Structures are given as structure tokens and as C-alpha cells.
Image 1 (cartoon, rainbow, N blue to C red):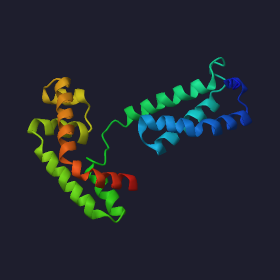
Image 2: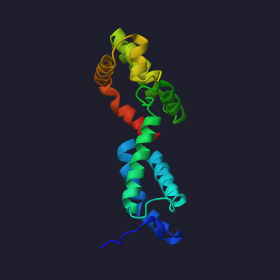
Image 3: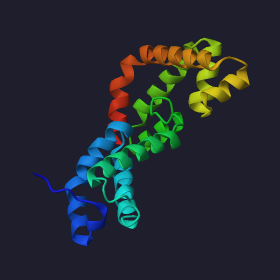
Image 4: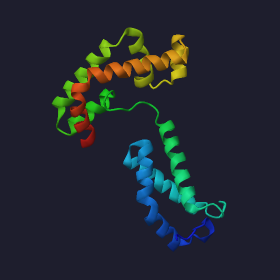
Length: 184
């Protein structure tokens, strides 16, 4: 039977044991939300730091493990919210170009960049406009709807349509994209 660890019994040794026992598991839990292991490590470290700094102010009846998972989940959701601007290598042409040039593999990046431009050009005009305002300019759906005088539901539908078309148009380049993404 596992002993119940509470916040008030966290001395330095107990905290270190807790950290070592849960850090990797919490990172793996967090990566399910963010998809970014580096961000997950930072999030989990922040949660442990916060636990240590506030151990005297937190309800001692609540189990530590529950607190850790809830805190990691909430911080992941905050991270997603705060980084909502679409930064996909598939559509962020500047990042794609710079990463590939640094890796000494500019040819696939240039070819992929060209294919992305062609795919974007195949989008219907209104669909492309909505997509670029949201995904390239970083505007929220509500902002796009207000700017273009259309409903938020229409924005959602146009974004879905654009992503469907782009996935289809770029399906032959997914391997190149994956290799470039994994290499960075």
C-alpha cells in the first residue's frame, strides 16, 4: 500500500523523492496535451517549484499526486491557450525556411515552401482569406468574424475546409515535413 503524502510533510528529502518519482510520468502525461516535450519539462518543473514554494498554504488533506496531475493539466491548458497562434511547420514558412537552412537541407524546404504556396493558392478566395487571418496573422475566430462581417460558425467551417484541402494537396510532402520536424 502506498503511503499518503501530504504537503505539510514535504521536507527536502521527501520533496526530492516525490520529484524523482513523478517527474517523468508527469512529463509524459503533459506531452499528451502539448505535444512538446521541452515545454512539458518546463511545465512540470514549474509545478514542482510552485508546490515547494506554497507547501504551507495548500490544503494538507489533498493528496500530493492529485495536486500534481491537476496542476500539470491546468498549466498545459494555459500553455496551449497562451501559444494558440498556429506555429505549425507546415504553414509557418519563415520557420521552415530558417530551420532547414540551418540543417543544411534547404532543397526540401524550398520545394515544400513552394508546394505550400501552391496549396494556399488553390483555396477559394474567402476560405484563404479566413485561413490566413486566423493561422498566419494569429487572429482569433471572433476577431476574424468581426473583421469580415461573418459568423464565428462560418469562420470555423472555412478553417475546416482549408485544412482539409491543404492536407489533401500536401499529402505527398508529409514525409518531408515529418523528417524536417523531427530533425529540429
